[in-house]
Length: 123
Image (cartoon, rainbow, N blue to C red; front, side, top):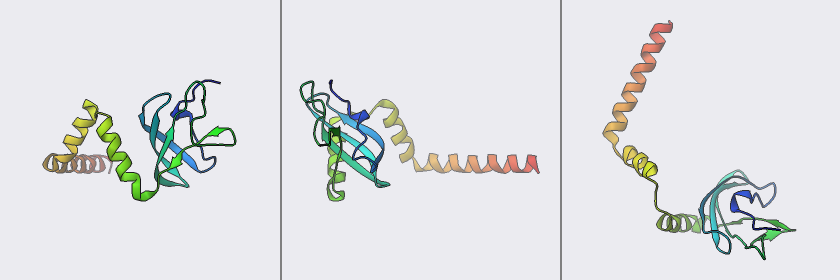
């Protein structure tokens, strides 16, 4: 059996869904994911495993699983990931645009006016 990537880890079975890996240091290192556990937004953490121990840790009944980080620690884990993983140029641009409240307000006004124009044309 070969190394299992964190994207493929979907356990604990029937509890975890919508896994989005936000940090993956590769075989023999850690991975962190935003995911849903029992339908609630959560953060998962695991040791990826390696070629000799492909299931990593934690695991259950021969299946790789995520450790669900307690709510009190989730922000700390995600903040550390942000320090380790540089933001892409696209993410930085979106963050800057979202912080520009004047531009956001103007875009909302434009969208609402366009919807009004469409409603008048259809009516």
